[in-house]
Amino acid sequence: MDHRRIIARLLDEPSREFDVELWDGTVLPHKSGRGAAGRVTLRRPRALVALAPPVAERRAAMAFIDGDVEITGDTIDVLEAVALWGGPRLDARAIPLVLSAWTREALNPARADGVIHSIARDARSAQHHYDVSDDFYRLFLDPRMVYSCAYFPHGDESLDRAQEAKLELSCRKLNLRPDDRLLDIGCGWGGLLVYAAKHHGVHATGTTVSRHQFEEARRMVVASDLVAHVNVLERDYRQLSQETYDKIVSIGMMEHVGCAQLDDYFASVFRRLRPGGLFLNHAIADIARDARTIPWLHKGKGGFIEREIFPDTDLPPLGAVIEAAERQGFEVRDVECLREHYARTLRLWLTRLEQRFEEAVKLVGKRRARTWRLYLASCAVGFRLGRIGVYQTLLARRTYRGEVVGVPRSRRAWYDENPTSGVTSSVA
Image (tube, rainbow, N blue to C red; front, side):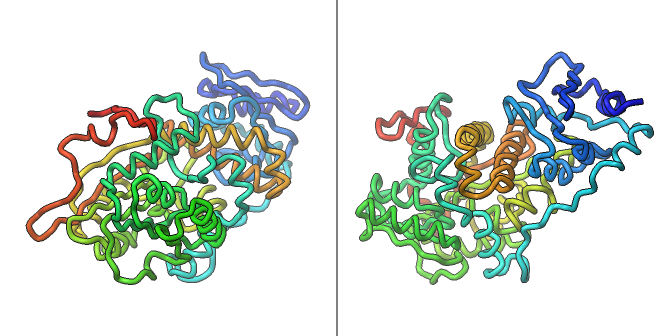
C-alpha cells in the first residue's frame, strides 16, 4: 500500500471538514457537507509526526512553526475545522510510515527560572512576550498599540475605531471625572493612559514590567504633551507605594497573575482603591476546563500558548475570579462578556500580520513570525468555539456606609452614542 492510501486511511474521518494536500500534490478532500475555506498542506513526510494518534497540540504546533505543515486560505476557519476534528484513525498499517518520519524535538519552553510568580520571574516571563519588537507589534496593532480586546458596537468598525470604542467604554464604566487619580495596572504601551488623560482629564499612573512598553508609553505621553498628567512606572504592581487612587483599571494583565495568587492580587488592588472607588478588571477566563469543547486543541498548562507565547500564564474561570474579589471586600457591580469581540479583534490582527508577513519575518525571524500567526489564529478559534471568554468586571470598594460613587442606575450612560468614541447603545 503506497503512502497516499495509508494517509488517506489515517485521515478517513467523516468529521474532517478540511482538505489535506500532501507533499507530492495529492489532495485528500473532506467528506463532510461543510468545507473549510482553505486547506492543510503537509509539505514533507516528516509532517506525519503531527498526525500520529493521539494528536498532540505541541507536536502539531511544532510542525506548523517549523514549516512542515502549512495552512492556506482562511487560517482561522481551517484551524477551527481542525480543532473540531475528532483526530486521525488509529490504523496499524500507518504506524511504520509515521515512525519512519523524522523524529522532532519537543517545543522549547519559554519558561523563566526562579520561583513561579515571584516578581523577578514574572518580569522575565512578560518580557519574553512583550519585548519582542515594538515594530513587529506595529505591523498588526492599531496606532495606539492597544494589545487587548477591541469593542465593536456596530460590528463593522475598523480596528482603530473599535479600540477607541473600548477605551471609551472602559472610561465610562469607571465614571472618570476631571482630576480623578487613575491607576492602570499593566498599562502596556500606554494607550489607555493617554486616552483617559486627554479625553477625561484624569491624572493617570501606569505600571508595566516590560522595558519596551515602558519606553514607548513614556514617548507617547511626551508626544501627547501630557507629562503633567501621566506618570509611567517600570514596576510590578506589587512594588507600588501604598497611596490610594480614585479609580483603578487592569486590562489584560490578570492572566499573568496565576490562580493561586488571585486573593493577593485583589487584596493589593483593594488596599490602593479609596472607599467609594471603582475597579475595572478586564481579563480572559477559561470557560471549558475539560477538553470536550475542542477535542484535541488544548490550552492548559504546558500547552503551546503557555510554553511558547505566555510563560506562566493562567486563565481562571470567571467564578473563581469573582469569588476571590468578593473575599477581599469588593462588591461586584457589573460583568460583561466580550467573547465575540475578541474573536473579531484577533481576526483583524491576524489579517494585518499575514498581509505584512514578510516584514514580520525580517523583524523577528520566520519561526517567531509563524509562532505568532498560529497563536493569533488559535486564540481566535478558542473564543469562537467558547473555549475561552473575556470579561469586563466592574468592582467597587464601598464606604463604611455602603456607598459607591459613579455607578449609574442604567447602563445607558455607558452605551449611548458619542461622536468622539463611536460607542452606541447596545444593552440599555
